[in-house]
Image (cartoon, rainbow, N blue to C red; front, side):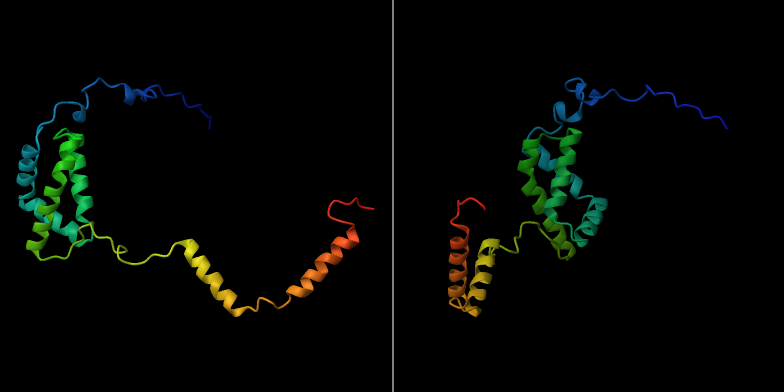
Length: 170
């Protein structure tokens, strides 16, 4: 069997080619289909009232995916498709979330909104506070005066024998 060297392929994209597309050549760079918040809300309401969407949304919400994540994914995809701008998407987010929560309530499912903070009212000790508490517990169990006199005597003897801290070695 003869080993053939693979010929270099020049059919691939040039490095950086994705950065050189024409201005306005991408959907999010062109004029949006729905430039106002009212128009974008109408777009989402018509889309979210379809039976297919409602079934899929309920399935996703039952899986435990927070409503905030679903709504953010929807509006981000619409921005990338050129449906509306980023700022309109941010302004429409609360409306999308309310509509999704309404659909979840009407279906009778328990869902996560993504707005809750379970640790909000709990006192969360920081690492330093925990270390201080642990150290204080150890101090209560140890006799502080025990062994301190012996150590002082040993330390002074070592210094006297060596002739001081900066003395030459002999």
